[in-house]
Image 1 (cartoon, rainbow, N blue to C red):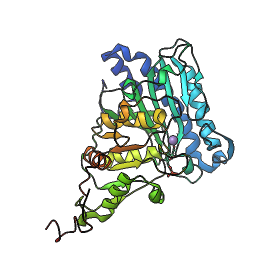
Image 2 (image 1 turned 135 degrees about the vertical axis):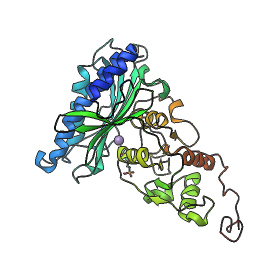
Image 3 (image 1 turned 30 degrees about the vertical axis):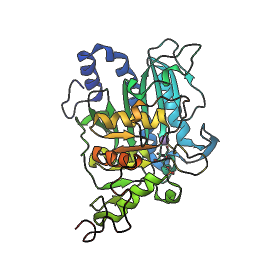
Length: 350
Ligand code: F6P
Ligand code: MN
């Protein structure tokens, strides 16, 4: 992005990006709207229980999940802010169909207004995720803005409402992180160029689903667990925060690999995470930080959605680790065809 001086305000950085590339003008307005909504949501979350029961349950969302008070509040704040931006339509986790905002406007937004809902009400980090697409819908093809590959995204970002509130952003030229300066009510650039280390020793997966995983994931995690005595030749640490944005934030800063694979529970053949407003924006941010994002076999950014709430298996993180997982999916894992003793130090490998 144009001005990369640490401490610069988001609005100044966006203005510099637009000065360098005037075609980003509308994109910058949409990002500014998302930032405004995020600051409002952050203020509510920051008050915690003083703001009421943020986890109070309401109706069911598109996916059958029960909506919590904060899910609805975030959805309303973001869609309200986007109404004042050049946004034609919004695909939100909290709305079954595409929401029409400003017909004829050039951009469309896919959004998960409140990610990591199970962390609401227990003072743990949650987030918001968004991807900005060129409007391509027509009366004949109302989903047209969201059915191309993720490479069409003009920008993507996620906000983490944690001990600090941060905004991770890409406009297709690297990934930057801004941190909310609460005294000023503005995001300031704190990480001008995120670079995910290529090799890492930390994985994130919900291990309670182990018995349901598909074979490549079972084999990979088994080998992670075998640590330095196994074919991966190193000891791993495990972290699972239960909120995609928080796990993604950690991977960006510290490296590692995140997996939410397909599994054989009913309805989980494609995992749990949604392509348009979870996987595609995160994949864009990861790639722009030198990391990878795949569904096991395909690059996430090459996949086209056919429905707005479509799920996709998601594996992202340090480039070498993602490439290693891809080998397990391709049946080329280091341990394929091994004898039970393969990889034991001092036995097969010396
Ligand atoms: O949005 C879905 C989500 O809450 C993610 O933030 C998180 O990574 C995942 O679900 C957790 O799923 P599970 O409860 O199956 O571990
Ligand atoms: Mn989510």
